[in-house]
Length: 184
Picture 1 (cartoon, rainbow, N blue to C red):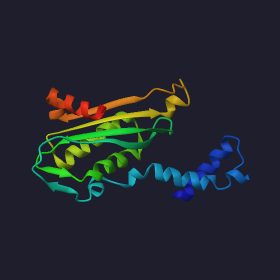
Picture 2: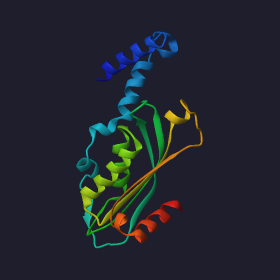
Picture 3: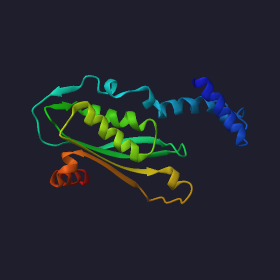
Picture 4: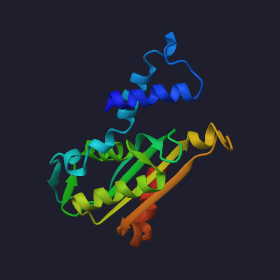
């Protein structure tokens, strides 16, 4: 499939008026094909594989928060990057998940063509389904090159999305505690 992608990139270069055989571009179609495969590697993953049996019984009931998980994704509308940080919290209900697995969930969903709104919900609902906690909260703040480098060209803009489930939605104090922790 990478060979097919490389040929498509070669044709794209021709379409924009470039010579894909010139020295600087001779290997660009292959490099671009490999890069696109890397940028979209989340399509080759699923939640059970990513969590890899790292769910443990534990009688811990206080909030767990992982902040500042870097993410890189491609806007599905323009195929240009957006990037930022995710903050993920949950309230265990007899089960916890390995710390790195939360970052891997963020990575898996962000490495697909995305809109930030769906990305936020996919992470929250995947964690909710996997460990059935009393609640999950996800906040993502990202900068979108589709808005920064084209169109309105607003360099300092960012987008913030959130998804709160269970006790985070039902209990204002719990929700506020989470938001205070991620603001620090």
